[in-house]
Image 1 (cartoon, rainbow, N blue to C red):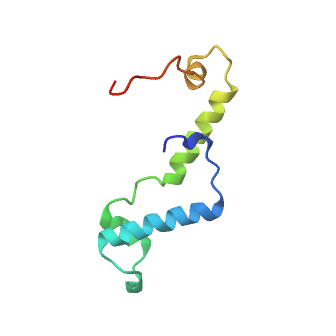
Image 2 (image 1 turned 45 degrees about the vertical axis):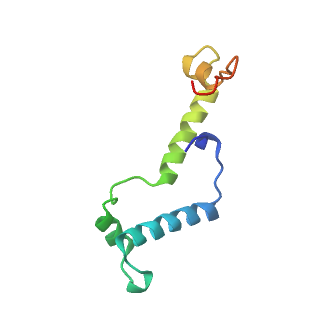
Length: 93
């Protein structure tokens, strides 16, 4: 999710992400698509029925990024977002 604020995700890729997520859930529930069990039932079985989609999380981050870009230059969130470190950290620190 690092850098999700600036991701542009086409509809085709959104569909691929959601289908891959359902594939993982089906595998963890040990159910095949040939058994024709509805996605909602699989989600209830695995326990993720009420969890938000990853796409929703990305959209929220993108909204926050837009708010920060429109902020005045002296606001702390904008200063932190656009901060460039003076030097690199040493290895192991």
